[in-house]
Amino acid sequence: MVETETYTIEGPNGDTEDFELPAGLVDIFAEQGEEGTNVVADIVVQAMAQQAHVVAHHGEGEGPADIAEINEKMEELFEDRFGISLADALGHSH
Image (tube, rainbow, N blue to C red; front, side, top):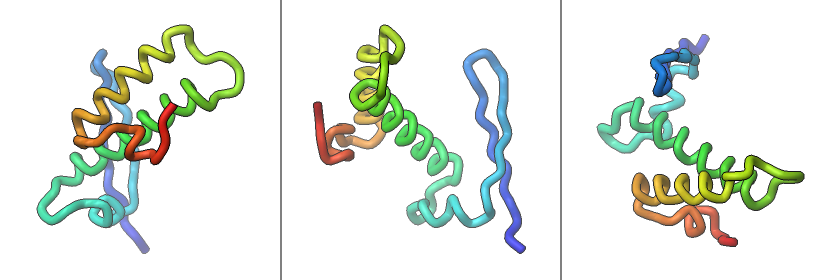
């Protein structure tokens, strides 16, 4: 039976959310010596960037009025973290 590992996310207001991942899963994505929390944070940033992109460019109906600005900022944060533009990472741009 596979054990689990608990990670915690803390929001800007101090609220927290714990979640479980199968032990060893984070290690699959880690580079030699990389901390698990960094791996999880990278995946969160990737997922949020992809989701913001979908809402801004591929969503059905209207997103929030400021989605263009939110998406633009997320793309900047993505590039700052990974050294590659989101457009290059996704393989397309708008």
